[in-house]
Length: 452
Ligand SMILES: Nc1ncnc2c1ncn2[C@@H]1O[C@H](COP(=O)(O)OP(=O)(O)OP(=O)(O)O)[C@@H](O)[C@H]1O
Image (tube, rainbow, N blue to C red; front, side, top):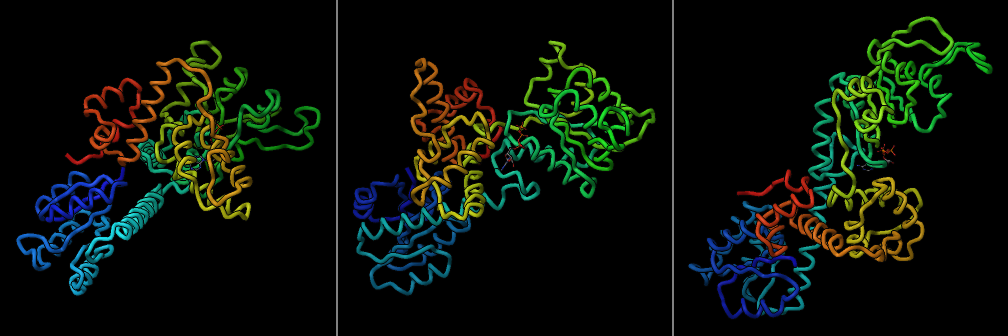
């Protein structure tokens, strides 16, 4: 429930408001000091403020001072000033000082409800706008501002200027290639080529010549000397995507290149020096592959001078919505459609879905939803996300999922504030911490953004 701070010294009006604004959680304050205490405690997006506060109830000096204090403490707060029915002068003064709107007594609950709903809508749009603007100014393709993604972006900023060989880990579709490009763009090699090769998508017998190039006559059909991807990336950055799928036979040659920075084309005898920064990516567990001897240990240590794990989409909280909105914008342009947004249930479904295919899956679902949607708002049906819970599951699993979802949801609504998350879930902070540990939601705990 959304919280409204009502600053009103008249107990009768407080009661009247409590009954008539039942869609909101109301917290009350009867004077300036307690108003500021409540403001700090609840950080409400919307406040109603009676200008006639004690000790100057007949006038507006205390109310206007209270308004100034609120806006100084929380500049984005939407303050709706309430005045006597003839008090235009003070109402206008309050708006000039930064009040969102004013309302004259006597109280008409329908009108007040409309004003409140509008104030919350504006506040939400402003918050979203700020989030979009702050979402990765340096990494313009990496949309999102969850702490997990910001942390990964900070790592990119640190490693980009170095020459260190980086290993990007993460599930399929999490954006490993996007991160590799971000490293290249923020490096001194920005004006040189970025070349990517997917080791899994090229047949084993062709991969060597794709990577190292070949001399004319090296094999049947080699009509002219051809440069490989490594040479094409000279001066720039090479992304070896799905390095875990590189055949063992080629791994030794790759290790030599990484250690000595020289290559030999297939069918060639000459050593060619190349100056390439290498980034590797994989969704596989290379350490396990080393243990199983399907990946060379020496190559593993050579490519993982530093490794960066890109978090799966389901661990990025509200980023799911931020990315979905950005993609919706893009697909509206691409398909000339006019979908305006998502239904509330579609947003809930997106927040609760596990996204095994990560952002690529989100892209696919959104693309078809934009094309198929019948209304202005995409529904969970359009996304193919209805009836998610039809499978039979153990009670323990259901409880675990429900608690995880509830915690993440409350955390998103509380803007990352753990005290508020615990409050809204009706549990204590220690219990919340215990659940975070139990369900390994460590990205929440690393992001303690609360004020003491
Ligand atoms: N943070 C992001 N915001 C918006 N789009 C993103 C983001 N990260 C990735 N994408 C998009 O998601 C898609 C998948 O990203 P990418 O190919 O980089 O993933 P990947 O981890 O390399 O996948 P794979 O392991 O399957 O190769 C791309 O179209 C990319 O543009």
